[in-house]
Length: 41
Image 1 (spheres, rainbow, N blue to C red):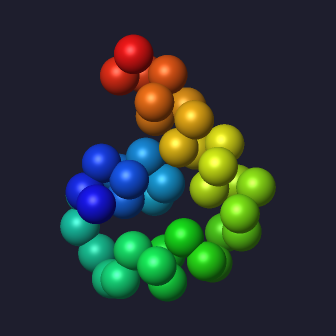
Image 2 (cartoon, one colour; image 1 turned 45 degrees about the vertical axis):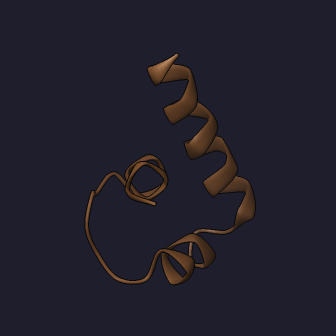
């Protein structure tokens, strides 16, 4: 979960990941996670 949280929010710690993913919306979260995956290769 920490890598997903970091990719989606830019922070390694915080409130429930599920709530954090809901707030910005699916499209934004998907783009952020794809960028994170591209970064780590």
